[in-house]
Structure formats: structure tokens, C-alpha cells
Image (tube, rainbow, N blue to C red; front, side, top):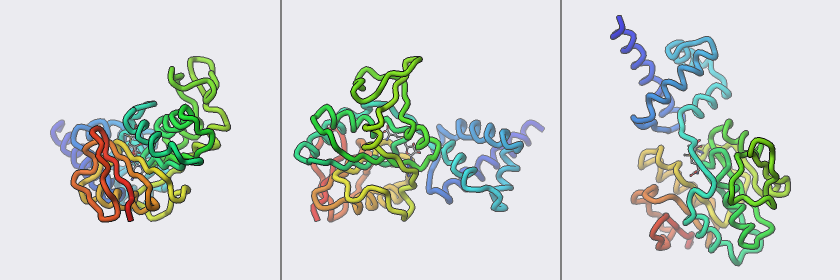
Length: 261
Ligand SMILES: C[S@@+](CC[C@H](N)C(=O)[O-])C[C@H]1O[C@@H](n2cnc3c(N)ncnc32)[C@H](O)[C@@H]1O
């Protein structure tokens, strides 16, 4: 009996994995599948369902966009932190040094630490005006990012964020006015709300996707740039991606491309 239960559970999980892959082109690697099953079971229970009955509801088209948004949130990893990639921040600083109003797009920004780190780096470099847009497929993450409230960080100055009780901080309204967030799936055709950014950065998001989908995402990101615009990713994320419009800039720690035509 226990074996049968385990088999039913396993086939429901496989059904969910297949359905998420076909709906969102997201692959959940094996080491995250147990965590996803656990999280999805908890969510199903909160709706008075099981993994199996929720799958049946999904098949009948009885889940709305909020359900799918939460399922997608549970399927992806949102790990992030302030100043996660000093090399990327330094590179952005160099690209923007002669720009009076730099525009940076951070794709797959999770709960917002990456865009705010970029803002802190630009501000420290003397920019008092810039536009940063963070996008993420997860509505839950974007809601957190828009609040701009985090655990205090020693490298976020009180000029940028005011201190709150319980060792928390909130970014000031003038910073939030320049660091905006938008829920957006980069695989959808809807344009983002930032035209011709000087830099597009995506880190630790492409790893979810098969080679073919990664290339599609990279082509989309490249097409958002004007000539002279830069694309940055974390190391080993672009695989063998090449496109005639983009020229690789040598960097020993991260991937950097510039739009040459
Ligand atoms: C591990 S986090 C990386 C956060 C941040 N870039 C960093 O490096 O710290 C990856 C984020 O990518 C988002 N993501 C995955 N697929 C996406 C897509 N198709 N469009 C936009 N965001 C996506 C996930 O929701 C998740 O929050």
C-alpha cells in the first residue's frame, strides 16, 4: 500500500514537472524536485487539495493566473543577496562612468537586492540620477522588491535607506523613484517598461533553462539594447551563445557582451 501511495505521489510530481515545463519553459533540476514537491503539497493543502486533485483542476483549466503565479514562484529558486557579484557591479560602474543618466535592466531580480545594489554602486560612483528596472516572473518577489524593506546591510548607507526597528531598513522614496520593479516573464513578448537600457544584466536565472531556451532569452536581451549597450551574465551561463550583433568583451569573472551593430 505504501509503495502504491509513493508511486501515485511520484507520478503526480512528474505530471506537475511536465506541466510547468510546457507552460513556462522552466526545468526544475533533480536536486530541487523534492523541495518543490514539498512546497507544492503545502500549497495544495492550503487550498484544501492534494497534489493529485490540484493537478486535475489544472488539467480542467480551473486554476487562475494567481494560482499559476504562486505555483511558478514555488517552482523557481529566488536566492539572492546584496552585492552578490562585485565583478558585475564594478563592470556596470565602468560602463556608466561617462553617462549622465544610466539605464540598467536587471532581469530575474528576485526580491530586489540586485537592482538596489546597482543603485548603491552608481550612487557611490557619483551618479545622482539613474533609472534601474528589476523584472522577475514571480509576482511574490516583485511585491517584496517594491516594498524596499530589508534586513540592514553594512554597505547600504543611511543616505539610501532609513533604519527601521528590528535591524531592518527601508529604501528612501527618492531611491525607490529611480529603482522600479515589474512582474515580467522574459519569455513573453510583452516589452518591459525600460526602453534601450545601457546595460542589461541577468545573473543566476539562465541556469534554469535548457540550452535552446537560454539562447532564446539571450537573443531577446540583446535585442533590447541599442548599439553600444552591454549585456552581462554570471560565468558559465551563456554556454556557446553567439550572435553577429554582439561582441564579447574579455572579462575573467563574468560574461560581458557589447552590441556592435
Ligand atoms: C536565483 S534568482 C537570481 C536573483 C539575482 N539575479 C541574483 O543573482 O542574486 C533567479 C530569479 O529568476 C527568476 N526567473 C526565472 N525565470 C524567469 C523568467 N522567465 N523571467 C523573469 N524572471 C525569471 C526567478 O523567479 C528568480 O527570482
